[in-house]
Length: 485
Image 1: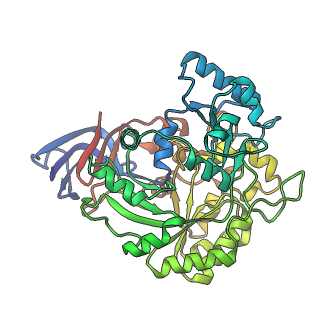
Image 2: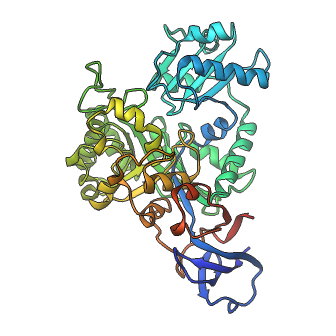
Image 3: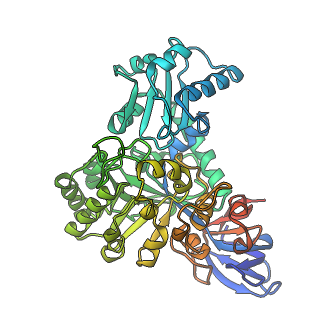
């Protein structure tokens, strides 16, 4: 549908009532209400606010789609309580004895006890159980689940590379079932105003999304991130970051090239300049500079922009040093703890700080313990913004829900409950948070691509808690309505 009229909308925060016409996927006119005439399709905005569509710049799509069907363990405050939650769910919703029991969302960084395979064995003798941590860097397996993938392990708690390789070995739903789950998850994202996602799934995302496109048009644009193990194949395909994939109608593009420098805060594997309390370990260096720099250089020489996972301050220093040595732009994913001297380097080197604001309130307690004395430079969004860095927001779903409004509210308020803001000096203005959540767009103007949303109220007059639940009354992708209430 190439002709769309949005009636009675208010373009931008605090905007005046207007009609907005869209033709051939772009905004072509913004006029006084009632003066725009007729169109093939009319959407009544009922006085809502018209804003650029939201971009979730970091999603693990299959894991998020699957996570929506796993046993939730977010409420667990100990390994024992995680098992209790698991048993309570199975009692209410029995599963076949032969079926893999899968739970997700636990955070063990503050637990008084340790997860162990024998806890699962005692609770569910002989059952194959796989429990994923919220940050996806820990996998807790029962003895039967270890046997299922042909492994043995002293505790059944697998971290980092062991976690990821074991995850790939676990039984999964059939591809067509997974694709249906993905379609449902992406539709739910569109209902929150999302018009683009960047898929960081550790898989051949180009092939996966090309297959899905044959069975239906996704309700968002998708940037397909390239995993490290696919670098040679991607070069052979001739794919470059930003390329539009054939026959996708502009909806699928080639994304950046993903590399890991370290692990995560909750597993105490984020690589830091200082050791974690109670030991001498500073975390885990996944990719030393001697390997990181050649990989980044080879990728960039073939048109692939690096996206480097770095959470600890030492990992971020290493990543920034590598960008400087290679002389290429790119992205640092997460950038959770930064040395003060590294903050201005993002802007100076043209490196995007791709951050996940919803992680800040989720991780404030574990950061207070494990990064004690350093939290003034943790999740330092205002400092990055004031230094001239470009911020782009993602959810890292399923680590946090695929709902940019949660991240926007967290960036503005630095809390998500009734506690006072955590380091409120690092809060940022709503206008900047919306831009970071919209791919850098700061309003709606004639000539813009018609990736848009209409919200039921003006976000600038809402409290942070109301921002999280703000209804999106319409979402438009390239001039096509993907969601409307």
